[in-house]
Length: 291
Image (tube, rainbow, N blue to C red; front, side, top):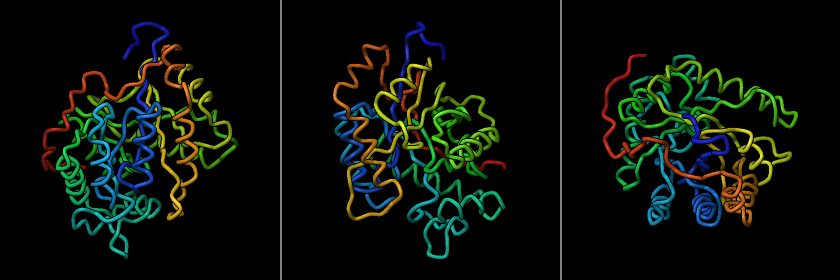
């Protein structure tokens, strides 16, 4: 994907977790209508999924994709090998261990993925891309199943590769996380899969994150850039780890005049990958992937 000229940066500012809660739903919509967010991903198994779908449907300028979720809430299918003792999905650590030790049945992953896709389509939301909640799409049998579906439907998939060094805030945990994501991406055969040229995660170490930091990071790259963020309004009824970060990111993404500054700098926010004609309107099918 070569830019038309050296100053061109096309950016998909992508807010994860639509459907997570009312506060997150409202924050995502506000980050779109009053800020620079152009795309979101839908957690179709979560309690506030229907509310999220109703909220964003009147705003077709906000692109929508499937936020494949195997680590929070209840599965939409039987999926016994994906559940913990409480009947819900295992948390990220538990699911990663189960996926990498062969304790999850590949067919159950595929059926659950299809069910989440179908529920999103039943709410009349276009599925213009796929990514995984907590990047779960990169691990175990989830990766070949996700790539197989995307290849058949010509749907882009998130490829979250960042430079190993820089913007780490001295955090060894974030460095290890980047290594794990690179390893996850390297496991897959990405031929025929569309992804942005560059990936920037706003939800990284807190130190230095600002509207100016984000602008500088975008200007240091060329081509199609995905910015991952997690905006949300403050929710006094939750203690989820990202609660305060969501509010901070919403403030950054709705900084006054930011979109105009980006336009002047040659940064062009959008919500579709080149050549993507919302193939997610089709049914993904139930073809079994060989793994």
